[in-house]
Every structure is written in C-alpha cells, then in structure tokens.
Image (cartoon, rainbow, N blue to C red; front, side, top):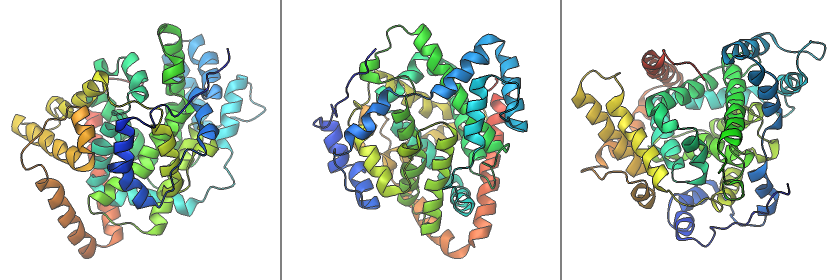
Length: 398
C-alpha cells in the first residue's frame, strides 16, 4: 500500500502558533538559537510512516513463537553474552545485535560521561523535569498518545508507568551504563523490543488504527520527538529551575541520548547533536500534532493522582502535599494554555515552591563542589528508583 503524503497540517492552528510565538516553543528557539522553518519538512515527514523493522522481525521470530517468559530469557542471554555472525540464531536476532554491538564512529565516551554526570548532578530536579515537563507536556500531543490509549496504559496505572520510565532513565544515565552488555544497554534493547511488541499488537488487534492521521504506531518520527524530550526539553526544564551546566555537559547530554536512540533503532539522521538541531527538528514534528484531547487529560490526571495512589509516602497529608508540589511545578514549567488543555487544577501560591527551588539551586551551586553534587544526586535518584521498584516489584517488565 502506498504511504500517504504528509503535510504540516497544524502549522496555522492556534495551539501551534501560540506555542512557537509566545510559549515554551518561543523560549526553546531563544534558548537554542534555532532557525525554525518548514524547508526540511519533506526530509523528515516520511518517518511518520517508518518503523523499526529489525525489532519487529525479532519479535515475530522470538516472542511470537514461544511463551513470553521463555522469549525474554532468550533475549537476555543474547544481551549478556553477545551474538556473532557464526551463532545459530534467527537472522533477525543477528541483524539486531550486529547493529547494536557495532560502536558508531561518532561515539565519544568522554561526552557520554559528561551527559551522565549532568543527569546525576541535577539530583531531584532531574526527576521533576522528567515528570512535570517532559512526560506530562508530552500528553498535550494527542496523536503521540494514541499507542498508550489503545494498549490501555490507563488501566495499568501511573505508578507502574512512572516506575518503568524511571528504571529506564536511571539505568541509562549512570557511568558506563551504555557499554555493550551493561545495564543501560540491556534496557535499551528490551525497550526497543517492547515497542515492537506493542506496535505489532496494535496492528493486529486495533483494526480502527488511523495510520494516515496518527502515523504508524510508535513510528520513528514520534520516537525522535520522545527522545528530544529526554534531551532538549529536559535541559530547558533544568535551566528554568535555576540549574547551570557547562558546554561539555550540554554536549554530553545530547550525545548520550543520541546513542540511546541509536540503540533503540531510531534512524541516525533523526537524532540531533545539539539544542539548535533538536529545536528545529521538534518544530517540524509539532506541526503534525493536534492539541490535547480528552484522552490526554485522562493521562495527565492519572499522572497527577499517582502521588495519592503511591504508598511510598506513609501518610495521606504527605501524598496530598507531594501532588500539590507537582502541580505547582507543572504550571511553572509548562505553558498556561497547555495546562488548561490538560485540565491541570489551579492551586494557590503555585510559584512559591519553584521559585524557592531556583534560589536554593543558585546557593547550592556556589557552595557545593561538582563531584559531591554528582555523588549526592546519584544516591538520591537511586533511592527514589528503589522506592518505586519496591511497590511495583510484583509486576514484570512486560
């Protein structure tokens, strides 16, 4: 079947113009020095209908021919011990591991280290940024959320979804995490195959999937936008919260997520090297996304209410206070228009907590050495992950 030709169909829509003329999009262009235009639209738009075929073939040959638990054990064996051209394994498995075991010429281990250190050094602000800007802000893009809705992510619960995202992010952003056979590398391969498994399930079971408008499920262009969330949007959020970072750390962050994207099977020409490229790529992608719909608001509320459902904090007043703080950060980090579309509740004195954070970060920056901040941040993030895993340990990765 011939693939449809895509147009920047929302470029004249109010939500698109507001975001890029006066909202966070405008801030991103100032922050990055980007020159946004539609001149490269036709270069990127075909990826709305492009998917990771190698990952899909592995799922067909390994996961759909045996029990899920057996397939997972088989894949874990390949991840931990490697695969060579001579091994007696399915052809798709060889292709996957030939690609992911091949270190790209552009990979710079010093930059990976700098990127990981920025993620750790930013301590809990990293987790606030991921949750209250990157994740909830992504819910404003209605078509991007369709795979989550049709795979019934709302039934799974926000605690579990957040735990999985945190597990992936923390394990991808430690020292040497992305070396072949290491934990971050393992998470990247498993996540790649989960995306393929979900995509094949959607195509098989969800007959009313609207490919022309929504793109292929979990398509390469949407994947690019998601990983720009982990780099550009994340960095912008840290800056808004009063964090500073060196040129080397900034380069490192983009390099780290470029390599994670490479392991996940995102085409290399979709992976930006810096904030200028990332903003220009993101601008094009947002022009095919409508604003939040009712499903978006449900996802946003599920995430906000996660604080109330999560048993990590013992007392109800603590959980209510945590929810309030996340709402304050969401209003502070996102555009008001986005918050209104997602039906984020308004709360009193919502700028006090974010503004206090900015002051504390500036003081902390001057008083505490970089190495101590990296160690403290690493420890704090691992503790939050441990807490989340302790409440979701009875459910498996699938």
